[in-house]
Length: 75
Image 1 (cartoon, one colour):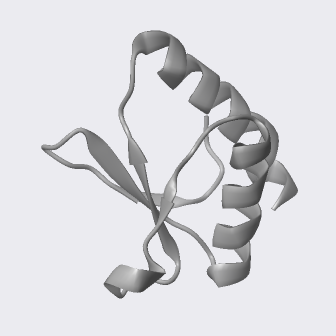
Image 2: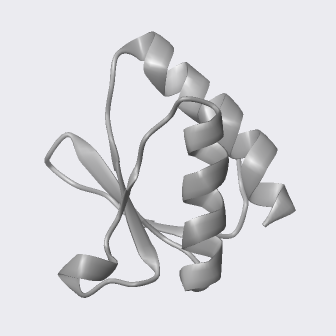
């Protein structure tokens, strides 16, 4: 899946996704919440255009990837 967004790989159980701007962060967060998927916007930590996505169970990761493939092209 390629949607021209940047990510920072991690040794932890999460990835950091860098989006275009704070509007895109808000739109992604809202769209995923509507699908029952919670991510963490990182503006409070000094990264206003980034979100943290935790790695979950295989079926949760599959649901996330499906949701991202539907949502990211619309942002």
